[in-house]
Image (cartoon, rainbow, N blue to C red):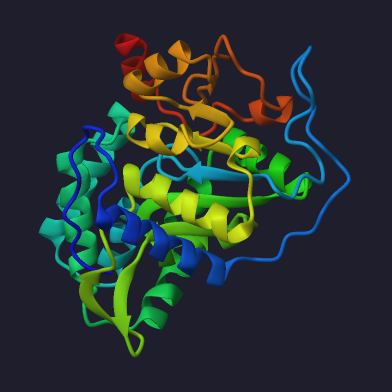
Length: 312
């Protein structure tokens, strides 16, 4: 894991580095994937709609963004807190992490400057460390800071796909090692994440391609779908951020989860399905399993709710 130069929020076409990042993420994800068994149960669709996901449709899969979609806050912030606890860096860096996490939880959006600073701070310090060491620490950090921040509603959506016998992948700009730990602990298939170069099991401080963000996420999903023999029109994708419109636009079943204002507007214009677990209010267009509504308010804060209402 190396210092990551972040991307600007404007959408742009995939570059050669985006394609490289996506292909590297897909390869890493397939290497670490868990086997998936086919279950008999399928989720029930909304009235007048066929059941979705379709049980036994193994050419379909689901792709979930991580930060603020599956988990409250950003994985890299929590990872940084865990590294501080283990004396990987000093108090001044922790103060910066605390501010970044507070901003993310209150605003509920990805601010490029904050996200760049967070990733630079968290990832540059592990250059020269062994991959196995960071994986072991990551398991501990998940239990300490992440396990209680999973949105129950989004978790239920992922489980519906698993119960239908489909593979479920996280797709995130977080380091692939961190993302893989989270996916495994949630019982998901695997994860597509930012791939950092390592030689003989030691991080070199360089990336393979670029951070898995925006167009790079779409390239990763496309590469994985090709390798797995998936039909993207039968697949689903879930995200909170307008930065992920390229990924959401790839699949036949896009979902806006806890959407930022730009994604909410875009999703409504295209009649995409929406669900907001930050307030518990059901969006006008839902069309997702009723089980996903259980615990929708879990982990929400009064400040986040108030800010969200002001921004609507």
